[in-house]
Image (cartoon, rainbow, N blue to C red; front, top):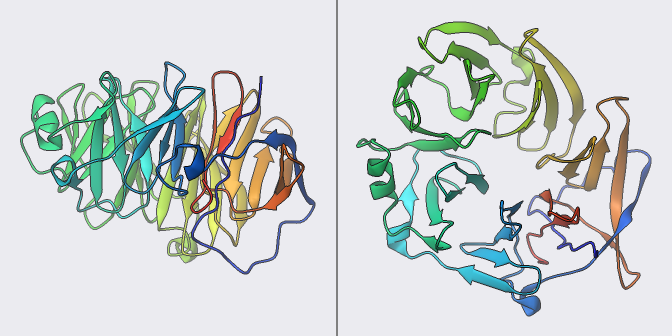
Length: 326
């Protein structure tokens, strides 16, 4: 098979030194941009659907790739719902109800994956979930369950239960652990665990001290990997990657750096982490890391670039995206 790829640079160009021992990627990449059918050259998020189609979010549009051609859908103003509490950039979720949710800077849109069209009213979808209040933020866990936030109340679409979150903090991510524990990840690094049945607080964790709270408060990315949950936290310039073992209530800092770590993907036993300077691989068994600051294209060209997101298709092909190149 061909390794299909689109190359992604982030907007946040930083004049920082490259990680030591950087090298060019051992993979060959094919280049896709607007001339190949993308709506523009800014691929913000890439994911693979259960049916094997690749979804690429450009600025405002959602593009589908079936292995041969790109098609896209474009939202109208009525398709966009305001999320007052969401302060991050593009974040894409698939839920268990055949929806695709795309958040970006205090807004969200919803796609019906059966029809591959934007739903006319996101508000009506929330009402169909049994939620009639204003939604300030939305989350989808690894199991596909949708969580809706109103003020300090977090609502589970699956159980129809409401959980109280901490006041005075920005909730940035939600996940469950072994179907027993609700995990709440806040902007200051605090992780709070609640019993899914009773809603009572079980424990809380602070992975780093107060001096780092401002350093990593801008955004959060989670990756659920069997017994562990990995989290990337970014600030204005720096980033941290952490691994949580909630059975032991432990957190290990895997990587800290003065540039951005943008997402997490896993292929076989290796993690792929796009960064401001190409991408990094991490082997959790050995703890080893490798840095790739150059991508080799199939025509022999070498490209130095930021990478914002990495995803893998059903055939094992590695995709990346770009802010300006496709």
